[in-house]
Image (cartoon, rainbow, N blue to C red; front, side, top):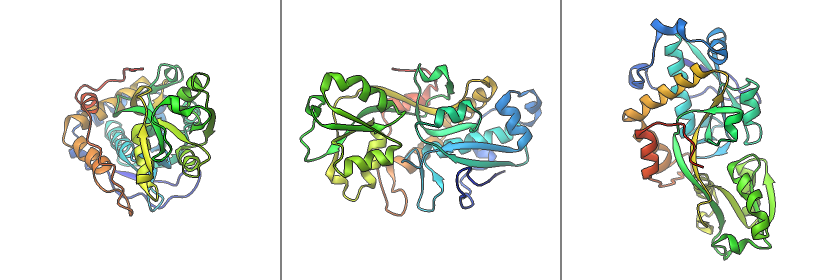
Length: 310
């Protein structure tokens, strides 16, 4: 079974038991009988320490965020917990402790590369550039990069950004689009430390547009005091394959994670997870994104792949 430890950066309350029983995982991966055959730097560290370190975001709802009690929660967090349970079974461990580390778009890759985190539970976009440093699981979601603006701002397209301030989170996929298009559309660019700060700049009027994955923008809008004040507009700047992020140095660990996720996708769990985090009220405020899975998302579940679509 899994248990939790404190986060590296600050103490967290005991994590609630959201893992399903092993019999419900249906992953089809090798278990105790083949445990000794599984080796790699990440796998060996998990086996010897009896601990897995999971990264998460504090404001990337509904994928990864700190809930009303300060606990890691979300769609990608739940998938990570299933991967952790898959690791426990595959390595033949009686117990596996979970340690949580809050990360930002800026420090997530160094945390993986330096071995501080075994698996990053967030809407990480799989890109060819990032693949030079880290590996990605099979995709768990597909999103598009667009803009969040105030409903009364009169901004509908990139042309409307001239002379205005555009914010995104440093180190995110929105970051590269904002830098790439700045010269063409003549706006000022600002880079916040995380999605929560980016939205605060938009909400306070210090920025007029926030560029990011549409589902993350929908989550931030849903948490606003008055969600009707904000709209998602503009063209799709790119189609993003969202995945869990892990070390390139351990192919066996990636295979184990991929096979666990593929097992989840084959069963009824994935529909239940999608409904829980995208189509039902979340948290004490009852935030509801009301987002049904797109054809692209269903295709990612039907044919698990770590291919890039940029």
